[in-house]
Image (cartoon, rainbow, N blue to C red; front, side, top):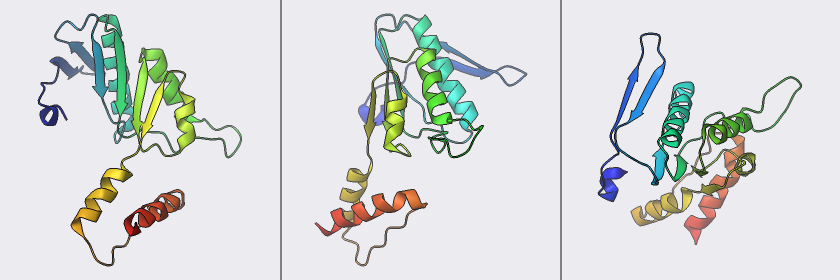
Length: 167
């Protein structure tokens, strides 16, 4: 993303201690700056989520003016409601952790369900990738295109994308 935008990534040290703990240090002054941390929380979810939390905390302690967590993939999103007793709603827990770490806002992409946006107690912008994908596919002019959903919840999105292809 930085290369596409023609900017450099902010320098930082990222390493692991012998016991596996992550260490992050921001290597430049970000006092009073708007910081955008791009971090998907995909596999390994726990490591990536913890890395995001540590980066947010480091930026907060470095006196960044505003910290935006840009999350192209939001891990633990599938647990977005209670379906049985004694189970966690980890989508809300993740939102709480990001907020508590010190993020000022979240920019998330293609959340598992739209309700997750409401789990954040800070501003959360939910953007969709399908318009870009639909335009890309349309430009390819593919005949007899088939769109497949990875799960039942994605069927409605798949159908909506098919309708956009027909337009």
